[in-house]
Image 1 (cartoon, rainbow, N blue to C red):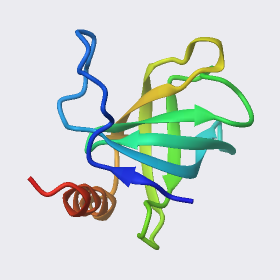
Image 2 (image 1 turned 90 degrees about the vertical axis):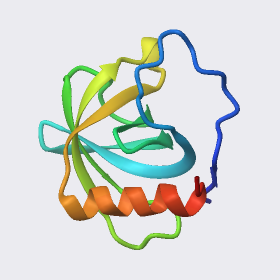
Image 3 (image 1 turned 60 degrees about the vertical axis):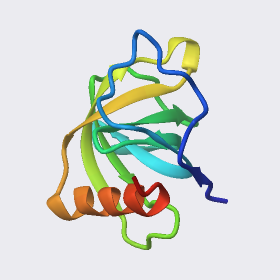
Length: 119
């Protein structure tokens, strides 16, 4: 089941690195390490990155990853490359900053965010 909301309800921390607002999501996705897919769950997304929770496979052993996912209500698969910027301690969530993404994927994320939370 996909969920989404406009605000995570969390107060910004002094360690917040994101320049863009994040939106909660709950989707299964693939994280690619050395060409192999590993199942993860994404819990939030912004224009610049996302938070993912590894379900299977390796932890955050590599710095750069491939990502493949579908946004709630969007049928197209989004692909991106990312850099782990916040490694999950003890198997916790990973913060991923998008480093490369096809223009069409960036546009889909932008439309998804705008449709969920018009400013």
